Image (cartoon, rainbow, N blue to C red; front, side):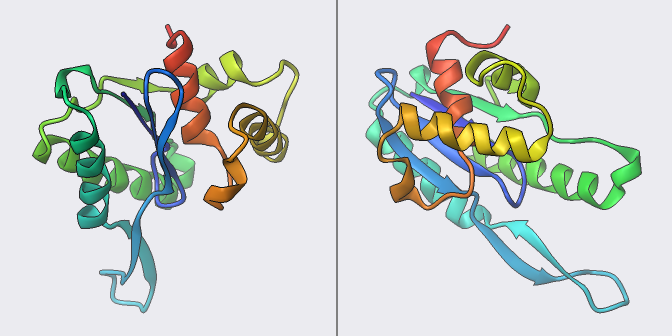
Length: 169
């Protein structure tokens, strides 16, 4: 079983069996909360209870926890994008805590988006909009039921498929 997590509040989680069948493909569960600053502001956080339930479901479907591999897309760290970096780090920490509580590998490996994209998307794709569009096209081709999931992109699903096929080295 492969668990692939596109880190962040706008990310997703995909769980594939080793034969490529999709067990789960969901948006990352989040909650909207009032920020802790003096000025009124809202932020999104990982809903750890919901994430734990999703992962527990996967564990109960797999009879051997030792065969579960967990891959997390490396979070963006960019001092020029301080708020986005803080959000990514908070999401990563929440995810790692849930993995730890469930005694799952924390993670088996971190993956840079460019690593899995190079392995599974066509060459010559550049820029975020083009990458997202290509990712959706490839996800639809590889997973005919992709549209039933109503997820905005296929990143976690494609990352899981990449790792299922040959891994990223």
